[in-house]
Image 1 (cartoon, one colour):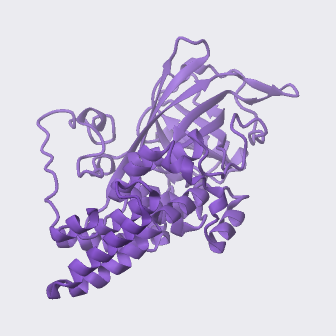
Image 2 (cartoon, one colour):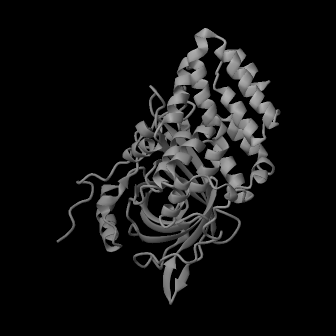
Image 3 (cartoon, helix red, strand yellow):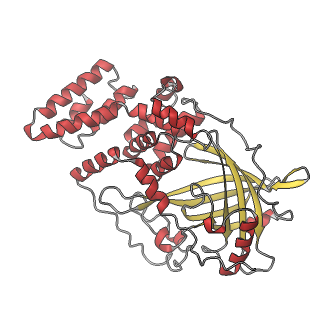
Length: 441
């Protein structure tokens, strides 16, 4: 019997909880409910029979109780993971009322999504991540914190399969497709904009929307495609990842690809956007409208572009703005023009975040303990001119003891996810007071 074997070996006793979760989901080999209950009873008997493990048995009981509701928590997490500003109250209320089984097609989850569901169940971080998001009850910032701490391929695949590919979870608020009802940009975009000027590598150096624009180490590369007026956009960024119990913070590196069509849309004879783009992140497809509101003058040594965008998923709509630069920091010569343009667009320049593209941040460790960026990539960021040279002296972290692993798991499952979100957004850096030169009187 699965759970008895795990416990009798005396290693990682919490896998008994995983067995129960697998039984509850119909994914385990012994899927009959009575057999699952028998396994649980036998496991309890084996553990409790050992005097030195009686205290552990009480812990087992608590963890098993959590694991039996793992799928319930996962489904609730999916229900609340992408609440928009307009729908957040409704989805939060849904979470407070409890789990609504009518919104979940369990046959779809255990049928069409059986493989990613099993992979998520087998992944410690995926289980923790889904539990974390469920406890957020529709708080979008809180959910972002859960992704920063636990996000991995298994979690993304599970969400992708259950939400968009197969509709196992019925939470679509908006129809899929481009954001055609988006509000116009705050000022008229550049009419004589040349899309070819975007080719090559750019860094996001300033951001406006803290939930989308302000993560670290943001490098975007634009390349032509065989289709006229289309470019492929490669996006790299890193989310700060809070340290687990008694461990240092790391980073969660992310890469995605977007297709951008330069369609130059006009309304009532007025240009409202330069391009539309489509991409995929955290299991959801997004559609965005881009408008370049300003850029450097021809012949200026420091290139920059000021981009405003609106976006949409099947769950929400959003907007943001950022500044591109060819170098990892915005040149001082460009700051006066950026300040004036932001002010004209009704955006407080001092509300921008300063995106961290420095070597100390972008050389931080990733989830496996390895640096976020390769040596070659590190050579592209500030202060890393020699990062691509010489041997790699990275040493993986020392392995954790079984007791440390158990305590880590208990700490993670019992945590308040809002604290993680607060920590995440506190890592963002606002532009300092003296960043922009004084405006002309």
